Length: 254
Image 1 (cartoon, rainbow, N blue to C red):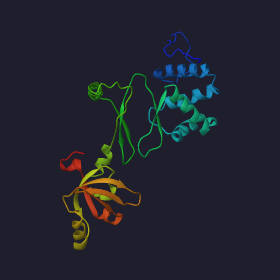
Image 2: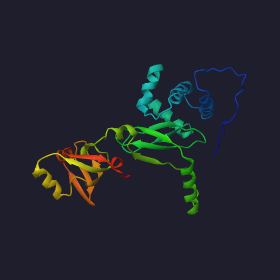
Image 3: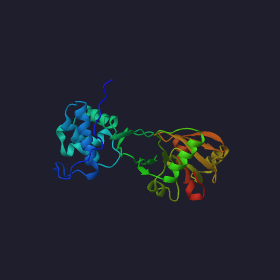
Image 4: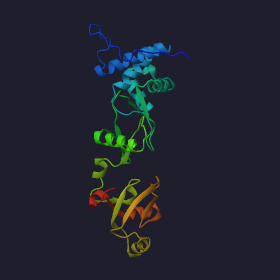
């Protein structure tokens, strides 16, 4: 087997002319390393791939292939070739310059892989906002747990799904049940309708003060919820009549 090595940590001379002053200092080393890798593997269209890398690194957020194409179109429309950009992104991931993120119910996203730095993610299930976080206590605790199992971790990721602060604010003071997110725990605050409607819902355990957990929700408004340990399938009409408040608004935790 032939092995190729490239100088990932070769220092750049301070007297060397900077051909790319627009690139952030922390990204220049990545650019140089990627160029060395491409040459080592005799890749095609190296200059074009470096332009794709520039666009990707200049954008410090999670992006889909389509979003990256939009960014590239603003400066280099001649590079708009989905297959080429997809191939180049695969190279970024293969050689350790990017990583794929596959969150639930979202398109594949890509983010810059910072060497030696780890972070986890909060994902809002309503608006799709992704927030990065790092906590040393959490990281240390995970290592302690792994050690207690005599397990040697190589890599890990933590994805916490829930509601961001803006989506929580939209729940003040209450909202229709059909707007609640999957996994959200809520309390019934009011039921819209006459005595007949309220009687039928009461027979199902759906009364003011009852605690619910949303299990699933369809675009048409139909939902499956848990109430008193029982799963109930509710039509959109019923879910629209029930007003609920989020658990955090009545002293409970998810």
